[in-house]
Image (cartoon, rainbow, N blue to C red):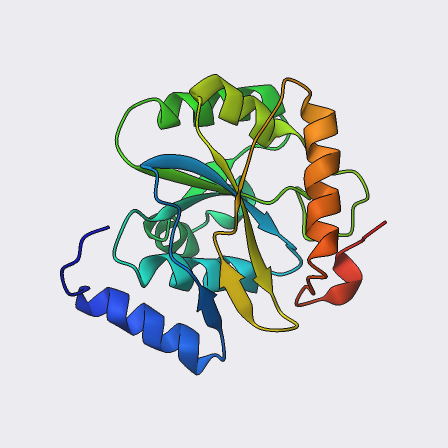
Length: 191
């Protein structure tokens, strides 16, 4: 992240985020390539808040996996410009492989992933992020958007082991300790 004055779009994104009542906790992840876990994911507005948070810093834009059904004209072009990556959830193996290939092409790549895998309530979070992180050797951050306090941030870096399920359960427990609130609270299940 440069020390130069942010561009007009970055300043506008920061201004709009503040006008919406949000407070940014820190800046984007410092690494050139990383994975950002986005919790709790209960609304399409999570994407908007996260986009504004990241773009206000005029650094690398966060890329987001979004189901391919959202990529229709004219919305598809806008979503792509905002960092959306169309994903085919009917073939998870192919989807993960294509994301790994894209991350390994070089250059800055911050990948945002919703662990719940859906805006609907789920008890057991998905582990695809783990496979991507291990295959590309990138750090993972516990990003969040708390609609209760209207705080958003890249969060803290989390160390992974070789056990995807144990790591995901541990991460889920750490998120639960944060007492986050989703835009639609009924869509975020805690144990």
